[in-house]
Structure formats: structure tokens, C-alpha cells
Length: 604
Ligand code: SF4
Image (cartoon, rainbow, N blue to C red; front, side, top):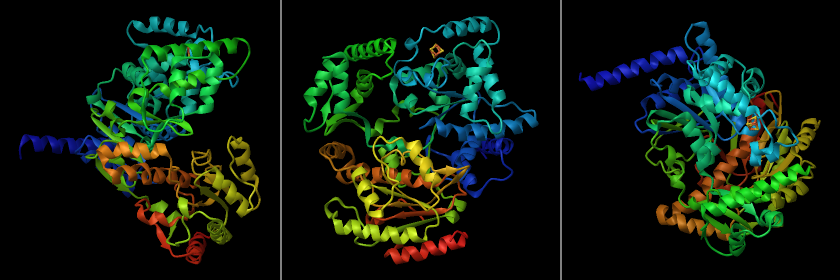
């Protein structure tokens, strides 16, 4: 046996020995073992993991990357939303508890969040303004207090290590992001500014967790990388819910927002450029220099500060325009009812981290994996699909081949809508609890709410918490109708305790992006490197698949939630999205399947 294979064998043994100490549960589930093995064996530095809810992926990934962590190696985790950080804290809390018992060292996980989430001067009344311009909103002396403490610490033990020890001592079973932020804001005496404390801690943390803007926005990424003192070749990066990166557009700005910005500060070269392009066909390259953008930003800040001092609590649309234009050099602009940015080449989105030691892209919504890896510019990545056994038992997925059930744009008619109504009514009769019905847009949502005679309908700019509370209070089975890209679909959960109150989600029409001139133009551009078929698929089917899975996810709070996913659009037959789907010819077949399923779970 040569020395190389000996070394490989030793690494293998060390990995599994360390894993045995780190993994926070008694046994691995089959799904977790598959994930851990894939990370251990990965031959490419990029790994895509498609693992369903309930597969225990967070514990598996965390244990595996800690087991292969080398000396001075950094681990960096990106989540889309702050709420998704809790799962990582929860699993690390269990690992730390075990390490405490066995006298091993405990891990730190430092959350880099926006200033508005930790600044002690921020209140409900000024949060929006602070989010836009940050510290200049206040005459703050907390930073001085922080720097004084930093000086005290500069001899010997660093402040970075002090903050890290406070955070890691705190990470135990049941602790989530909110508790860690509370610790930073309230418990560390004389710390002054908690945001500066977090930044100081980044350098020596075992693990850092933050949100997508710190990956996608070059300025924020620089803050993160500089403060972490990052060496990519010695850094493992995990991107959670990474399907979100394969989104078609990269930002939107309404014409109305532009008018409001002009009303705020009057004419500006950046506004004039946008006004010239408004309503013009095609893809536009934006020619705007940094000086002009800086000037726009400063004018917006000044406007907001003046209004704030006068007691007004409105945000600045000038700043909204400047935020929209921030990534202009890597994007095309289209102007079709609103301004939209599209990446010139989505395959470059991960370029800034491609040299990392290992990059793990994680999702429960990555099918078809090949399309996602192509879209994200990592076609040679290792790929693994993990199905959750428990979820397979607790959920039924029904699709249809009924020729009358399709929301194809040109086939929409009153007869079709009535056929949808009849089908949904049949299904709802046998669904034991609340049903969520998603339609492709707000207009069809109103049509369906009318047809189904339900008062629970999502409308634009609705106070959503009040709406959800009314659904929760409903003593009868509720039908909630909402658009596929509305507020409910994007993350609102209808739960009691840790259980979902939704027994079924119905997709009444696949949520393809609305056809538009912009979309056609961008597909034409992407065809240059993907070819016509793939460009069309990635900007239509892939986008619909991501949106649909987002909608369906509203039913699952945990693997224990029982219910059905029903896709009422026969075009689903061409999409490889649901490995366990049962295709039914008509609503009678669906009803039979549902009756059997709910009866088996003693829910009928
Ligand atoms: S320096 Fe820190 S405490 Fe002061 S305003 Fe800025 S974020 Fe808030």
C-alpha cells in the first residue's frame, strides 16, 4: 500500500472517529448517513445536496463539516433569512452540551446580522430609517465605549476571544439566534456597540453564520471577508436553501418608486438615465459611474436625515433607487411595466467563493439537480438526492393528467375556471382541515376566491398577521386562496405550537413567471451560452419549480406534519420535481387516494 492511500485511509478513520464524538444523536438516520458520507467522499469542491424536510440535514452537515475541519479552517454558513439560523444554533447547542459533559472544547457560532437587529438605539419607530442609513441616524457614543473596551483588551487576550467565549458559553440546547442577539445586546457589560462586537468576533470564530446579502452584495461581502480575515482555500462554505440563488431576476424597482424619488430630491443624472429607459424595449446595459451613485446615495441619506429631524418617519425612495442600482455593472436592465435587473450571466453568481476548500449547497427543493448546478455555474459539482422516509409516510403528492386542468395562458376561460372549482370542491370535501390554494397571480386569486366562496383571500398590501390569526380562529375548515408569489407563499406559516394547521396545499395552475417582453429578451441572451432549450427551461420551468415548492412548504412545519400536496396542472408531467408523485386521471381518483391517506392517518 503506498503512502497516499495510507494517508487517505487515516483521514477516513479520523473523520469517522471525530464524527462519533461530534454527532449529537444516538444513531444516524439512513438519510443522515447518506449526507455525511457524501461530504466525506466528495471529489469535487462543490457539493449539491437535495435533502427533504425531515431528513435531519442540518445536524448531518454540521457534524460532517466539523469532523473534517482542519486547524485554523473557517466555516461560513449563509442562510436566506434570519429565522433559518435557528436550526444551526439548535444543533450546535446539542453538540456543545455533549462536549461540556465530556470535557471537550465547545464551538462558537457568530451571527453576522444587519445593524438594525442588534443596535440598542433602534426602536419600532425608527427601524426602517435605520435600516436604510445606519449609525448616522443617531448621535451615538456606544462605539466609543466599544473602542475603550477594545483598548483594555488589546494587551494579551483579545476582545475577539472574549466575545467568542461569551457566545459559545451561551450556545446550548434550546438557544436560537434571538437569545444570542439578546446576549450581545443586554448581557455583555460595557460592550457599547453589539454590532462592532460581532464584527470583532468574526476573526476567531469556529463558525460564522450570516444571510445572503453578505454573499451577493460586494460591499457587504468585503466587510465579512475582511473581518473574518478569510483564506478561501481554508474555508468551508455552506449555503442553506440554495435554490433561492437560482432566481431569474436580481432586483425590481417600480416606476412609482422612481417618481417618488424624483419628488424627494429633484433631478439627478441617475434618475434621468432610468427615465430615458422607461418603457423602452430590450435589454439595457447601465452606464453609471461610482461617483454618480455615491452622489445619489448621499442625497438620499441627507433627505432622510432632514425628514427624520423634522419628526417624519418615512423611508427614502432615493435610497431605494440607489440600492437597486448597486449591482448595475453585473446586470442587464429591462423596463417592462417596472424596472427589473437580470444577471448578465447567472453562472457567475458563486464566483467570489468558488476557490473555497469546500462549498456545500443545501436545499430541499433542488430537483432537477442538473438544472440547478448548470444555472449556478457549477455543472461538475458532486450531487446527491436524499428522500426523507418519515416525510414519505406523512405526505401524499398527487398530480393530474386531466386535459382540462391546465392554467396555460391561452387556454384560460370561464369553463376552465369552473372545472377547477368543481375539482377543488371535491377535494376539499375529504380534506380534514384547512386547505391552502395557490394560483399563479393576484387576479386569479380573486377569481378563485369568488368561485370557492371563501373570505380568506390574500390581497396586495394586506396586514398579513391579522389575516393569519383570523384563519387560525376559524372553527370551520377554511379555504385560503393566495397568489404563488405573494406574502403567504414566501414564508408565512399557519401553525399552532409546532404543528401546521394546513392539511393540504393545492397548486391551481403552475406558477410560471408571467410572460413578458423582458423575459423573452433575457432568454434570448442566455441562449447564447445555454442554447434555446436550456435557457427557456431555466427561466420558465426552473422558476416555476422553485416557486411551487416554496408554496407547498407552507404545509410542513416539521416532518411530523401530515397532509397532501395536490398539483392541479397537467403540465407537471413534464417536470421532474416530485419523485413520489401519484398521477391521477381525474378528481375521483384523487378523492379515493386522499380518503385512503387520511383514513390511514386516522384523520378522516
Ligand atoms: S455605533 Fe452601534 S450602537 Fe451606535 S448607532 Fe451604530 S450600530 Fe447602533
